[in-house]
Length: 286
Image 1 (cartoon, helix red, strand yellow):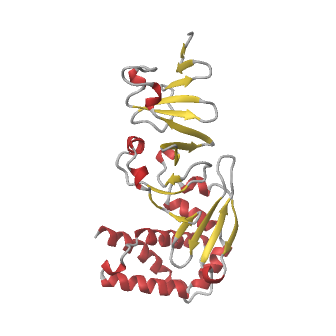
Image 2: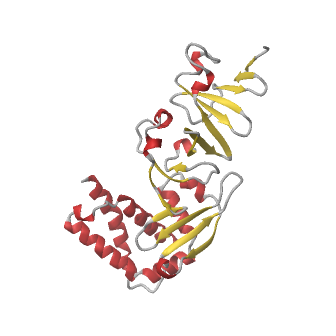
Image 3: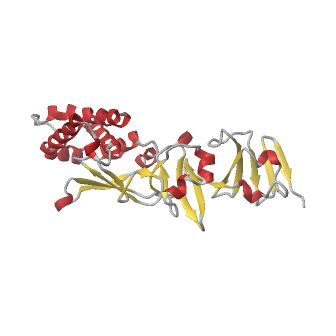
């Protein structure tokens, strides 16, 4: 029942664009964003077996696709005039795309031949991320990043204890990562942090990208066991350890405030063999 209501909302939004069927003017940039957002939401809400839907909803979907086909040239011209509407629309739906949307997109084009209704935008690489390609089906609303759709994480990620520690039982959606060496980017954006996931030697790697800094999750197990540990228990348990991949400094954050830096957090500088917290500095003299 909930799926039906979620599907009706974007479908009805798209239906309002029927007013453009007899209009000689292109769809303006703001309205075009609403069309793209509702189209993507419609596809995200679509069930696998359409025969399970009520006949009225199936009839409305069929009518909607016919309407979009009748408007195909108008929509195409409108998007060619306002190409940035594509990336900004995606960023409104998926928070993690806000980082992607802030990067420069270029080489916008429509594909050719049988793929002529697929729009393509290249999101340029940055100092930290690689180039990515976004595809959007103008009539049906399919969205692909590096030729993969946004979807649920594979089972080997969802059942991982580290992701359960960080996100609990959230239903995590992801798309291909633009961070070199990583596989997925989560669609959620905790405290503005873009979360990238990957595996190395069967161990999950979690990296948080924020303000051009990359932090990597460090398991508390690397600091020892309850019988033989290198840190006080208060800095091992109910904590999350983040390694700055550029400086090599580790910040220890107490749960549940694990995403933001605080002055009250302990900072471990392994290179200089010292720990810091506010005005307190501990030095290892051994």
